[in-house]
Amino acid sequence: GQQLNQSPQSMFIQEGEDVSMNCTSSSIFNTWLWYKQDPGEGPVLLIALYKAGELTSNGRLTAQFGITRKDSFLNISASIPSDVGIYFCAGRSSGSARQLTFGSGTQLTVLP
Amino acid sequence: DGGITQSPKYLFRKEGQNVTLSCEQNLNHDAMYWYRQDPGQGLRLIYYSQIVNDFQKGDIAEGYSVSREKKESFPLTVTSAQKNPTAFYLCASRDYRDTNQPQHFGDGTRLSIL
Image 1 (cartoon, chains in turn red, purple):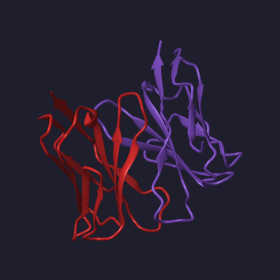
Image 2 (cartoon, chains in turn blue, cyan):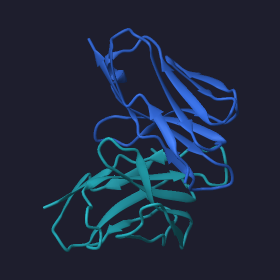
Image 3 (cartoon, one colour):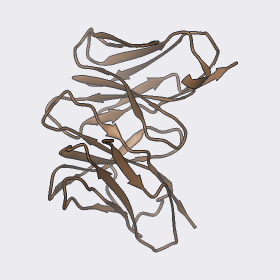
């Protein structure tokens, strides 16, 4: 089956620092999604990417769809305490309602 | 407001009991999904449904059952055959007709064994 490797598994950063996390896949995806999950809540969509090479921003968040279609990264600039949470990448192959494969998540802690 | 509602937020099950988790959406989405989340892991697909009266097994369907009698509702039953049911369960939906539409999630149900 499809494999998604997300790294790092966890990060501890100082408030104001920039953060970068990435996902790599063993197969090609046509869609990359980045979600954030707060404790005890469902994941919330941050950014959706639909074309290879696409670079999309959402406030302090920037994500890119890799040229090879097998990777994506998420950057958070000038981190703030409310950025704390688990960030998941997810990829979807073409033509299927179910094939949304999730990474194992990056736990982000922002220290004051 | 449109959204996905999961209930209850917390659920406790005795050994040998079946329990049913509710998922309702008013987004007019055709496709609905159930995921299981364990600590430190990503989401694993249990079942999904693309249309009313039809559903398909995901990667970890054993010990679970679903029904899709209405477009708005996709309940998940955790049966006594599921030997390790303690987990956080997430329901999601998507407009299947638009291939660019991402999945949107409910707030989850945390199931624990007594």
